[in-house]
Length: 138
Image (tube, rainbow, N blue to C red):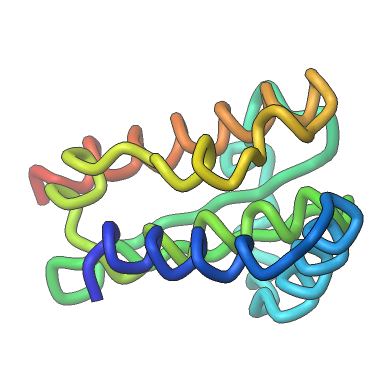
């Protein structure tokens, strides 16, 4: 599935909810499904700068696609990371770099987060793109 197709799926899912409390509950549930990151990857090097809570993001190239693993110590943030990984994990570096995260604006995520969480969201997207840039040449 392409990044655009996954983003469209997420936009459709969020359209089912009547208000942001229901959407937050959904995001929290997504966070609970996030596979556990290996303790070896919970290092300062994999900690995302700019997030209010601790967020670890690790990427590796497997068969020309980037596989991300992540974790957070905050439940909403963990759900946001799960959303981002759903979109970007198992995609090529080229696809990640060429596709903007349109779904964030279309579901109203950034506007419904506190300013510090919104900054953290942008920091996560930036780090995903930086990993794609670094792994593109491998």
